[in-house]
Image (cartoon, rainbow, N blue to C red; front, side):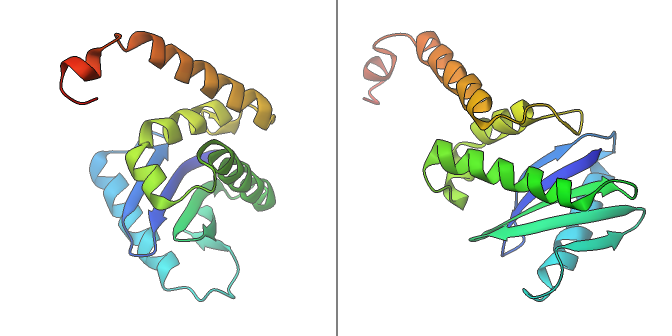
Length: 157
């Protein structure tokens, strides 16, 4: 089971975090800081797996973003790596070559995608097509909820 997932930049800025186990805000911040700094000092040729506290950390860098998840010691780290890759593929498919700015300005879509993929730290949906269908349905629902002329009336359109 995935304990948490973090997305952060090469500069160490946390862009997305999803916790599947209960933690206090203070411990989340402390754990994130420790883990981010530990991953950023690693050389590119080093393994994408590391033992940290009582967890296995699996991470992968895609362009300027690090995708990192923590799994239990008994879990298969290759499955965690595959989940990270699947999530990146979904983001790429939706945003068309995802970048850090897509995550920053569309974080709700990134979280929604992650929620469709994972439930309680377990892989919920393996089909990229089904996840993208759910996101398309959510986009359609959002469009219907936005009143016609709202942006024009507000002087934004």
